[in-house]
Image (cartoon, rainbow, N blue to C red; front, side, top):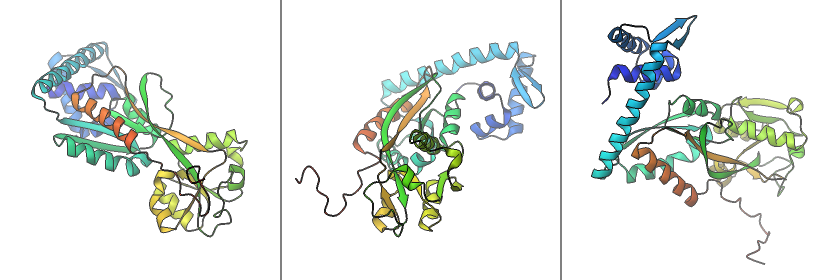
Length: 316
């Protein structure tokens, strides 16, 4: 509803990049530049300083940005107020998730949410944890779901659930019959890990350092960008790894990989992250409430099957 030129300007001002704004708005960069130039002609002043491939807001630009922020907040409040009267939940939400969550947790969650709220359109951006946090900081996405602790204290971070990480080896591996394994035992073999910026990678490396293992002395044979690629490499006998229990259900059932609990155990948080001060449209609040409840009812890391012959407390 708001002036298109103002919306485009607001996005460029948030990201301080015409290229990133074009991507976020699903526009071409020349179209973004044109909209900003029209607004500058309307005010008869420059809104951005452009030097050495970098941009910054002029004093006039800062003033326009402040008012634009208030305008879009008021539009969102008005939209929510009317929709509360009519009972309608609709709109477009932009959700971001790190790779493991996007591949193994969100499809079922978003499917159930869409069934309940068919008029809400959800767009999903997938990146590693570092990338998702940056998108939240820059207001590119409404809500992020990440798989590692978030260091930015200016963002709201809320625990979704804990995810268990386990050692993963091929069925014919010397460790495959173990009921648990230490990090030192696992790292006697070539190790396959995630890429730089991955939340999984950082959580695991911190855990290994706590066990007295220097990351610079590890025999890292491969760095791969997704759990699926890592599982394929382990299945091929290239090395061993540590992965989320949630990523292994199919392979455990088929017997192509073996998951072994670590001693001591390791878990990491799956968390919602969003702007603290950002006004939430009703659809966003409904999604957050729905996701909270879904996480309580659907743990992503069910317990590993008990080894044959091992008794549980319930059977003693």
